[in-house]
Length: 307
Image 1 (spheres, rainbow, N blue to C red):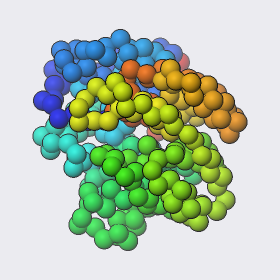
Image 2 (cartoon, one colour; image 1 turned 180 degrees about the vertical axis):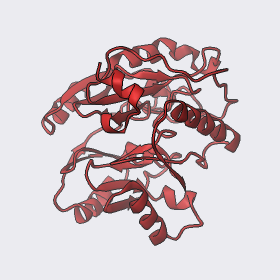
Image 3 (cartoon, rainbow, N blue to C red; image 1 turned 120 degrees about the vertical axis):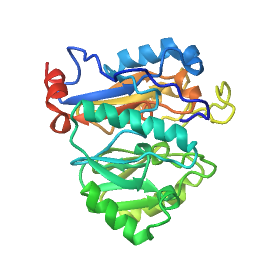
Image 4 (cartoon, rainbow, N blue to C red; image 1 turned 135 degrees about the vertical axis):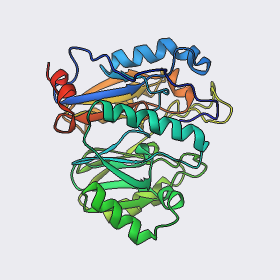
């Protein structure tokens, strides 16, 4: 979900054209790269189709990966530092600056944190718990484990911060490739390497939560970037709004079975989203979206979300 290439940002204002009909209880956003950015040229059509499928507002901040640079949403918005070790500092700083400028232009109210944490590495249960991989310890060596957990609890306004080991070999170390809460009491767990050990840990930490195994159908073929593994076939990387769960679809035999499994464990609408081509870039639906509920939207965006 990153690329070690020169970053091309939109020139001028990051003003956003707001569609007239969006999500009634919040807003889904997507990132949009510069039209002249050759890296994304093969995906122009896919990016536009994804925007339409998710009824999202595209933010022209210079990249498609929006979740990691956007604020984490709990009962408040917390903007962590976007400075991951897998990305050149100059590139992450440019993305951080561009997205922060957009947030401020739109008058979002958020807490700015000094902690380095990608948005895709913080999975909220909608009530009082977040799951984060231990990559956060590596990225913030000035903190002890206990001090970091206490600071995260305070800033995110949650009771529980559960640290799990990242998937072996995962360059990014993001929890959104491992787990997803469908509700405070229902957690989907991917079938990544070592998932049974993580499942046992989560069962101890969340005894009242039902943990559902979610299979994958990983496809390495078609990887677009030589340095970034494809995410094709990884179903756990879904996203949701207050009313809809957006489930990735890859044109694979397992697609419909995953839709049915998710439908069995949520009362929300389950919507299939085709990311067969986009996922070869190295991320999927959750990586490509950021959802902000109505109560945390600035007035202007709230007005359009309710129109």
